[in-house]
Every structure is written in structure tokens, then in C-alpha cells.
Length: 284
Ligand code: PAF
Image 1 (cartoon, rainbow, N blue to C red):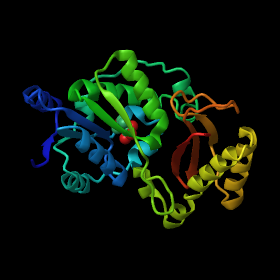
Image 2 (image 1 turned 180 degrees about the horizontal axis):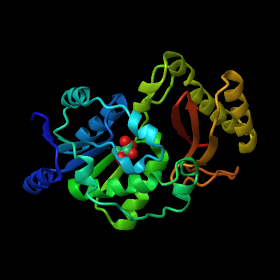
Image 3 (image 1 turned 90 degrees about the vertical axis):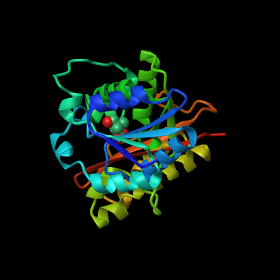
Image 4 (image 1 turned 90 degrees about the horizontal axis):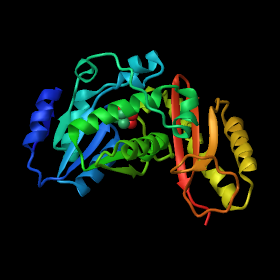
């Protein structure tokens, strides 16, 4: 089945209504500038669904920095080729005026999930994500939706959204895809210089170091302090946060014995690009 392009909500609704209910729908929402991380989500969706829908929509309501929205990479022709190669069935490309015909006042409150880490640096970001994902879920009516682990806080917010609003969709967190040097793939990496690209692997090295110290019995506050020192000594980049949290609730880990999944999370600007990453681990 060739890739079908649908560029407006009315046509998409018609397509969705006509789809035989015997087919399960897997959904990969994106903002385009696709890379192998997105393709791994398409592959996961293909393995677990009959029909794979991918959306590309650079969602204005989730950008707190207008310059970031302006500079967000766009590469539709290449994206389409990648989607054809990966075997996606439908590409939904709504326009901003179609998605947001009016000013939106709708406000979500995800408590700690939206106030910690990214929430502190990008106020309003998760409100915009929740708004657009709700709209997309209503239109696409997917059985399963696939999100990358790199945006761990986004996954937690979307799971909460799905529970709170009783969406009938299973949200799947899929593993981060990394470069050879360990840098988590991200559309924003395109805006890094060659030097920044190489140096940004310090993020992953720092995370592995923190995990190794914790596994060796170090207290979390010491492991974090050592991690921050390691990050700053190696390259003089700013570090916005380095935290160890529970991977599902994002509550801060404070040395208690646990078998639950933890995550070491980092945000750091490299030049004008803000990178985030996390690694999930357990202590047993
Ligand atoms: O992760 C992204 O690319 C975006 O936040 C999403 C989920 C497509 C919503 O705009």
C-alpha cells in the first residue's frame, strides 16, 4: 500500500470513518524532520498494528521560545521518502489554521509531571503538547500510539492525559535511538555544529557515570554532584538540570531501596540548541 497523504482534517475524518474497523491503527505523532528515532517508532507501530498513521505538525502551542519555533527544522520531501521506506500507510499533514481555528484557553494541570525538570524551563510546553495530542487522538482514533523515551516527561504527561480523559489508546514508550557516540537522536541535532555534535556525547557519558556510581552504592546526591563536575570539567557547557527520578511518576529518587525503574535525566544547551536526554535503569 503506497503512502497516502492527507493534508486537512475534513479529508482525514472521511478516511478514518471509511477504514474497516477490523484494522488496528498504530499512530506516530511527530513534528517532522524525521530521523532514525522516528523510523524506529514507525517500525514498532508496523509490528503491532495493521495500519500505521504518522502525523507531521509543528505545533505552535508547545513552543515557549518563538525563535525555536521559527528555527525548527522542516524537511517534508525527505520525511516522505523516509516514511515510504519505513512502510507507513498514511501521512497526516494538518495546517496550523486547520488545527487551531481559534484562540485556545483550555488549560491542563498535570501537577508534578509538568512542573518538574522541563516544566521549570519551558512553562506552558506540556499544555501545548497535551492540547495537540488530544486533538490528534480524537481525529486518528488510534489503538496504539508510539512515543520516544527521549521525551520521558512527555510520555508521562501523555499517559496521565489518556487516563484522565479515558482515551481508548495504549501509549507505548519506545527506546531512544543513539548515534555511535551515544548522542540521543533528535530533530534539533541538525542545528548543532560538527564540534557541538561530537561534544554533546558528554550527556550520555555523564548519565552512564551517574548510574554506575549509584549501582556501586554511592548516595544519589554525591553521584549527581560528581556527574555535574564531570560534565563541567570535560566541556564548559552549562547544565540546566541533572536529576534522578522514578521513570513513571518523575518523583525525585532519594536513596530508598527500590526495584522500580529510575531515570537519570539531563537538559543542557549546546550553542543555541537545548538538548534533553535520559537513561532508564534499575538498582537491582
Ligand atoms: O514529540 C513530538 O514530536 C511532539 O511533542 C508531539 C508529540 C508530536 C506533539 O506535538
